[in-house]
Image 1 (tube, rainbow, N blue to C red):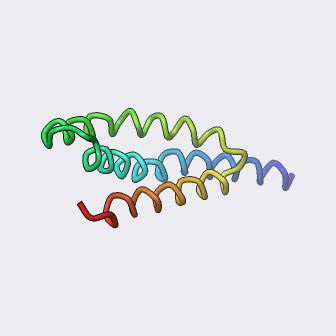
Image 2: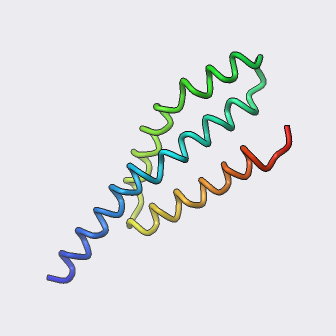
Length: 92
């Protein structure tokens, strides 16, 4: 009985990581694209923001490949930290 509850909790954690944890990941990735792409300023912003939704869907698909919900959240947190440091820590 306890293993069934743990499996349901793990599935819930992965679903929540896919829905909630990947949205900032996709938005930060689009900010990094719009900051660092070697294009004109207008083209960079269009590229970054037009790829936000496909990046979010792709990140959601990748999160479901994690072995557990804890690993999914850890991966989301680590990538969010790296992308946040790139987006706001690197001077332009």
